[in-house]
Amino acid sequence: MVEVFPRSDNPELSSKEPTSQTTTQRHLTAHRGRFTCALLVLVASVSLCAVAQSVRPYGSACPASATTRELPPLAMRNAGETFPINNHVAAESGANARKVIVIGFVGGFAREDDHGHPEVQFAEYLRDRYRPGMHAEVFANHDGRKALHEVLRLLDGNGNGNPSAAEKEHARIILYGHSWGAAETVVFARELAKQGIPVLLTIQLDSIAKPGRDDSRIPSNVANAINLYQSRGPLHGRTEIVANDPAQTTIIENLQMTYEGRRINCDNYPWYARTLNKPHHEIENDPRVWDLAASLIDSEVEGRTLTTQISSSWKPFVK
Image 1: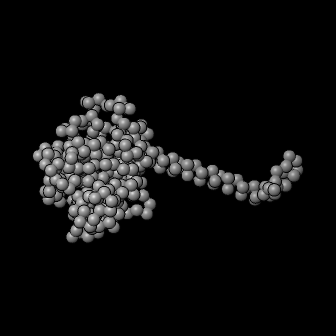
Image 2 (image 1 turned 120 degrees about the vertical axis):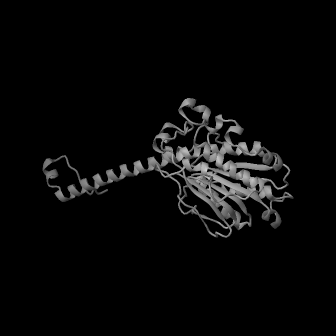
Image 3 (image 1 turned 120 degrees about the horizontal axis):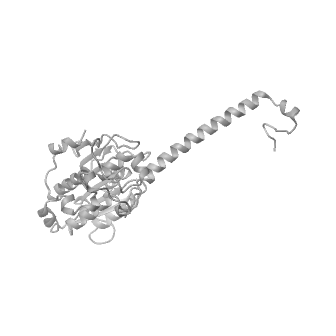
């Protein structure tokens, strides 16, 4: 093998090496070193932010003192305190022959059974509260195909895996998610549109789209959509969603949340996530966000018309 820059132990031979080549080599080496360091920092930052979304259950972390936060985390609050849903609605929903199907998507690389995520806790709450009138299930954000198979199975009355046009037309489906999971709600709604399946409501929490996937334009099979986001930290959500067809889809609100001067318990995340990317996790752990989601689902279950404006009681909490 021929070396571009031959080396020799003979000082005389070494002194005859071309100076320009030696300088070029040094510059190339220096640039390669700087580029490699920058690339490693970038990859590490993205990886930490993504992996940080795979949280551990609340029980694995020491909870903060009750005096240091306004509200305890979702897992430590009872159902009535966390999601004030109308008891009459919960009771009457069981008599409805057409179950409401609620599909949630977790963010990052989180598992669908990771109880540290409020998305998972929320689905459990809905199942308990609305049983037997609701089916609530959570999926990883890369499991859209699996979620579609489950929806088709639930809609199919005769069990052959192929629901009729009428069964699809009368589907009552609600989608929600956080981060990559929020973006997946829009992608999944498009897949349902291809199947001729309507969606009652989509709820996006700090939505972050994967490359090549648009989470900003809500398909016309969605009746109502709401987008909640925050704008601080290295990862922050889409600021605006729009309807492909405003005649078919109501954008309830693009609601910006702010956490300056407000403590949100994020002890379900490791320290590096709370340090590097806390605002993105604060909105996920914000009990007010889930109270609003519960209220919107309550409206859908009861059949009430959703308001196009968030009530004035929410205004102090948004920017």
